[in-house]
Image: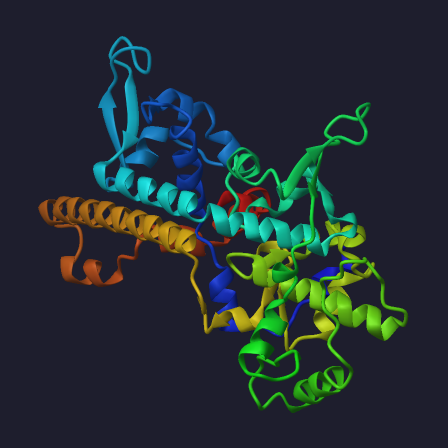
Length: 393
């Protein structure tokens, strides 16, 4: 793993920007999930304060909440949630509306969730995966915490939850009960069918990358091998095995909402998906298809064709709903910073300490200043190591 620090693609600014995630939004998403555990959608501030260290944060929780006036509101609680005039917090009306919209998008996408889950099981050996391992794919596939309760009761003819090893803890497996031919069509095969051509991989690098295009042409000179195989047959030669492994990773990334997944998670499923022992090197050999980033010391594989610049080509409704929440958080932080800047400038005007016009030009947004400092970069690295995973979307 130490050597893998050198194993990343030449920097692609657009895709690096797509991978950039604001630490603050992750914290606020954790706060959102905390509030949703309470029927009243409100909780004592002291509860959040007690969990501040797990979010790698210092200071007062109330001060953090005040930085996002468009998202959270503070109030004196009454009853069980905040008896005795205890300070509590909850969603603002606008935030509550967006949280409801996100939940509605998740509910509406349940048929698509079932489809993605079935396809993933069709990619796996024996059409089954341990539930404990599936948890690693929950975030990338856009599955909520309670996806089993949402999906299984409505699809008893398709999925079965079984425990083949009763003496083992956490040994439950999700099994696909029947092969669905209509789902055994990869993204590459679907694109070929739409264009009435043979299935082949497409190089998403600029034409100036001549050698990469040549390698892709050579790779495409042998027949495409579908990642879906009803009989579970394994290709005979090393070249065929790699062709199928590339197809499996391509299909798996196509099924994810953000067209990306950590390399560690891919390697976690080496046996189940028939991937090579050195999956990272395989990804780098096929730079036309995959971009491997080492942002925040976390190796991430990105499907190049899934992006136009730094934006997803196709944005799932759940992704769009989460983006709107991020925009509201940004709006709240901007409002807080503007208000604080005005207060600070007024104080300096009264004291006559500085040239106010010059000060206005030099003042930077607090969020940017914090995240750009060397000290905060290290703090951010540690934070992302814990929270950057897709489960925290």
